[in-house]
Length: 120
Image 1 (cartoon, rainbow, N blue to C red):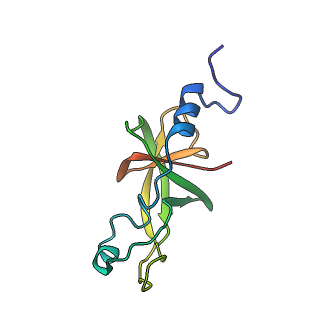
Image 2 (cartoon, rainbow, N blue to C red):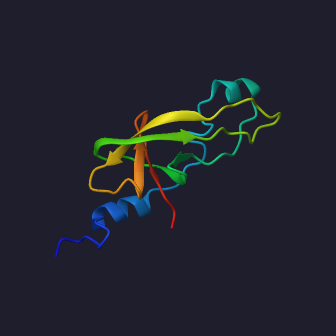
Image 3 (cartoon, rainbow, N blue to C red):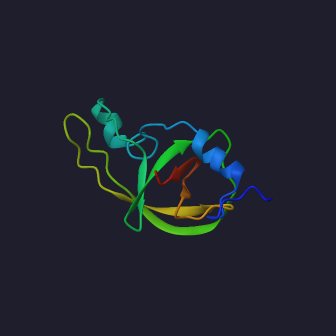
């Protein structure tokens, strides 16, 4: 018994992906200079869209091991600010999490301390 489900995700990786807390604004609007200059930040949830599927970002204390490219994704703009901003979507490079299908979870190459996963 290897601790793997039929989908190929190990028990320890499922636990990692399920136990990390969701952090709002990691990538969508947390470090935007435009938002910082306005002084009124949004409440955007960290998301990235890959092949039409939305992945939700979760901070992890220890960056996961990665194994190559998972292609590119798009971080949608955070427009939940007052007054509204002219923020644009950002194309980002994605990495595969070692031992995890990229249809389940990915890491932004520029943000290794967060795992982005598809919600069931």
